[in-house]
Length: 116
Image (cartoon, rainbow, N blue to C red; front, top):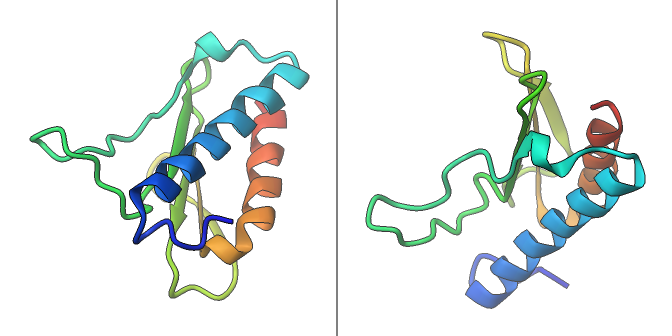
């Protein structure tokens, strides 16, 4: 459905929207206050305001209450989903995978949301 996200701006925006809608619906289902999250957390624009649509990140959120961050990076050269916590403060979960792994990425995203 979103396989052309790197070549098609409309597909890219649709994929971003899909992930943000999932974030808000999953959060609402679990009683989270969306106002306590900064979404997107990471800057995805160049200094001139042009969107940087390279998938790094395709989604990001920060829980302003506890400092926990979720960042999702799409990389078409990765065959399996990789996840790690940042080394410095251990407050950021990073998920890296290709768009073909979107279902798996969304499962991990929902798991993170439920943990908030």
